[in-house]
Image (cartoon, rainbow, N blue to C red; front, side, top):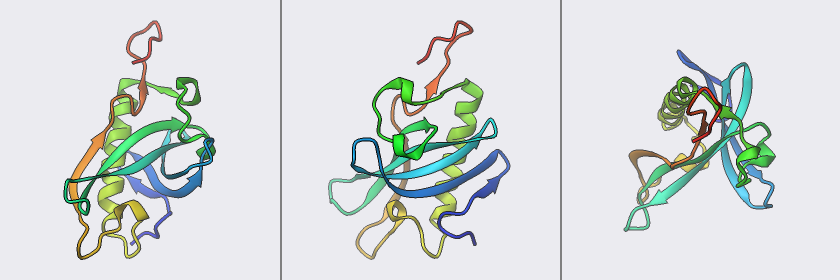
Length: 141
C-alpha cells in the first residue's frame, strides 16, 4: 500500500495527499495534489462534521493552486482555469484518492477515524471548487 504522501497512479492520472501547509493567510490547510496537463496543482481538503460533532464527510473547498503555499487565497487569479473535461478528471481523481487514503495504514489526518469518529462516505465538492472555462470566449464559472 502507498505511503501517506506518495503519488498514486490511477487510470485517469496521478494524485497524492500533500499534507498540512501554512497558506498565504498564515493558517493551516490540509492539501492534496493532482497532476493535470503534466503539472502539479494543489487543493484543500476539509471535514464537515455531522450534528453529533464526531462523524464527518469530506469537503473539497478549492483546487487549482500552482503553489501549495497559495492554498486558501480567495482571489480567482490565484488558481488555474480548467476545461470541463479536466474538471471531470479532477473530480474522479479526488474521489479515487480519498477512497485509496481510507485504506492506508497511516491515512492523512482528514481521513483519520477513531472508535467514535467516522467518515460517513460523502465527498462534497463546494460550488466553485474548481474554475472551469464555460465557453470558447474564455468565460469562467
